Length: 267
Image 1 (spheres, rainbow, N blue to C red):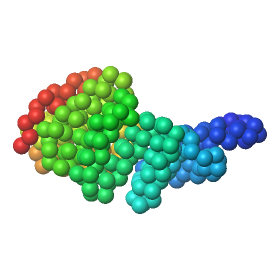
Image 2: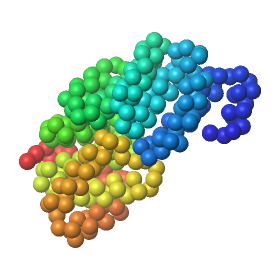
Image 3: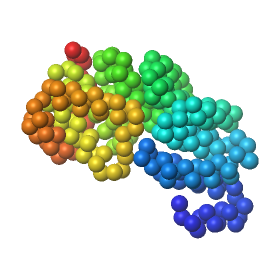
Image 4: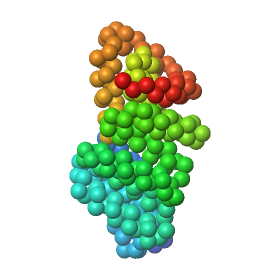
């Protein structure tokens, strides 16, 4: 965040603007690999926002701190922080923030091994009225991962396909990649390991660009996909397909992933 903006907000006594800007900066920096960079911004934001009472920026900051705790493995602290975020959202009528908190709580359940609770939680969000199209896209991708972990490949394919369609409509590259990797596992489990490997090559090339990283939900699918492909393909064949997939355009990969979603033949 620019130092000048911080100084301007501080000098003007604009605590809400300062807190919101700090919280946004912290959220933008937050990945599983960059928790230490993000937390100072989030801590400073919380110090500015908490004295002001319930606000949307406070809810967002609490949720980001909860996600940081989740990334760091402190699920108890994460649940407390995200629960506080949801309470603030409801008190100020922030329906979108409520949906984001529901998504985060489902992720916590999944990370804790409570797969059925995660499925129920994200379905509750999707069935409600609080989410917008972007949150639905994310929730559907997460649901696909949970269903794959539960062994329900057919429903996982449906959820991932819906997420992919929405992501394409939104032009959201990161979400296209997430859904495609879930569908790569669907393809592999449906006896098309070649397609699964190509899609993995595409997603791996995207993540290698450094603009995003796999969170726990994506890591679970990625590890299982990698294991399944190593079991089904020779190293030479796998490497060739990964290299081929890395050259796919987003459009080509999305079309290929859509084909995987239409297989619906779990083995």
